[in-house]
Image 1 (cartoon, helix red, strand yellow):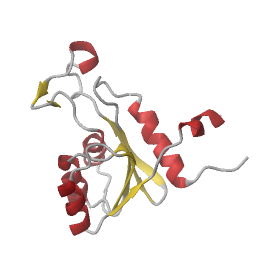
Image 2: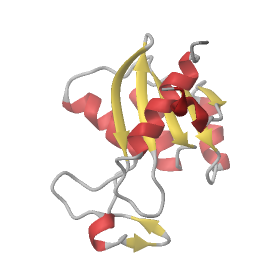
Image 3: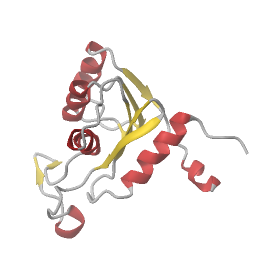
Image 4: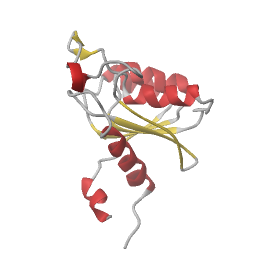
Length: 149
């Protein structure tokens, strides 16, 4: 049996995390990696102890669910909460990051973004990633990888 690549491995982790999402509009997962080691993971969901979209519906303002914290933010916040530096790390995300997450990724010192699915790729996010000299790479995810077990 041939081993999966590192990109496939970390992207699979992000897709598993997305299965924990509590937003009914879009399930997203994110995995932060440094030196080929997972340092944090996140999915889009409500604040700890708060109402979830799956229980009470999405709280939509200007066509955005404001009840949820995005997967990328949850992973970055997890690092901050537990004192794990993100400088020089990489993030694997199931979907292209929104503009707000793009800025948080840049500010956190993450140096590379790998995403599986194009999703409202904002031109300004791409511009900011380029200005910050981040690696941005589309890494399509083959769900059949998970069936190799």
